[in-house]
Image 1 (tube, one colour):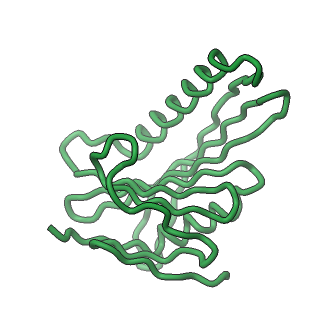
Image 2 (image 1 turned 60 degrees about the vertical axis):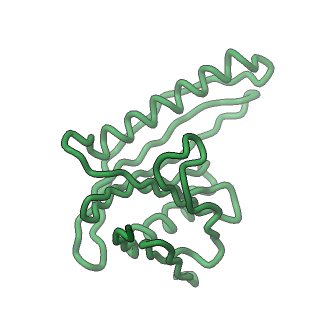
Image 3 (image 1 turned 180 degrees about the horizontal axis):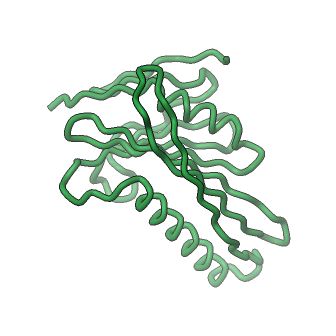
Length: 171
């Protein structure tokens, strides 16, 4: 196992690989609403934690992962139209269920997705893994993503974060 470092701030505590860093902890950079924590690898991998209020009808991790896959597919299709010189061709997304038991014995469900696409004639495959952990009135969605060559270290880092994540409301 690689060296890990703790991270704690505003009710969240976790361990992550020492080679990764917390690059953001605050409001969602896109809309400023929900809190997000971003972990960046020294390569091309990313782990994102998104905090959601648990309300009746909140979709499960399967629906969240499907929505994210559709958004990625739409973005690639838009990019293909906007940048024809890049020769972007979206491919299919394959999804498989994940299940993980934390050291504390909690079963955590998730989804693994592989999305193939090509750009300038080079085939690529994006690996995206999702997990959800509930803490009182808050659900934390954990998403890790990396291209194929960075997928194994992303998966190991995401598992470490899932296993060590703790959260308590501070306000």
